[in-house]
Image (cartoon, rainbow, N blue to C red; front, side, top):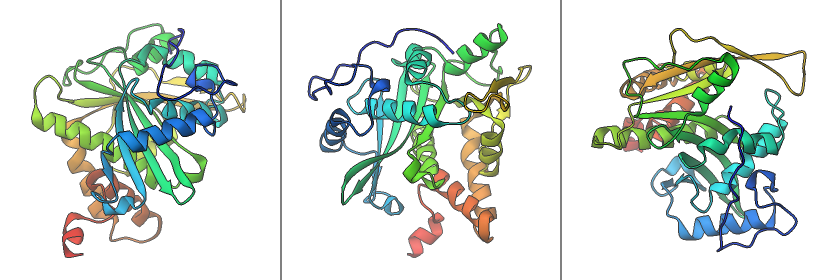
Length: 299
């Protein structure tokens, strides 16, 4: 991953916590600054989806924000906090800040918020890097580890790609479904852009994914394929140095995602136990609901 200095975040509408630096990755997700950002987000930005548009969201709302829009620092704080405590990374907020600095300007965030009786809470965030507007985190990671460029397949437009960088969920909300909602928002925005056509159309996704995550995404029907002629990367756990995590580099064409995930949902929903739960996750990721369209109409 790239190493550089993160430009200071500036949000004149919200006072910075005087006990923290201007770098959001070093801030406490429970700080007064974070609370101010959250209040600003829900009071000034219309959600992409909420319980009114997608009833299964209940008290939650989804927001879609570009790089430095107010509210995106909430996602940065959560990324730093989750990665610090994640066994695959265990990295400091300073490291997270440095590794993501090159893609700050071409990042897009999908942010999930829960409007509880105790006030709004940050549930999770999914960050992509738009390769039409800037560099790729996956390409930088591959180059830094393998010392050669990552070559994408010829069947996808290299300039119409979203690089999936991080999906992070607050520990209180790690039930699987909240990640599925974030994937739904990303797919819905991508699919609408593809149908609209033009220079904003997203034609595919790439990602560097560890083995466990790849297996889960495959079970949900997301048709990631390993990028040909790539070398997987072993990343030692920073919490347990004796354990290593294997990362591969994957891509998918957007026009085949929907049918694959829908087929998985229809196959698994009639089953029971863990299979049905995976079916519900696939259903959320495709339809923005735990129920198939015909079930929603019947209700």
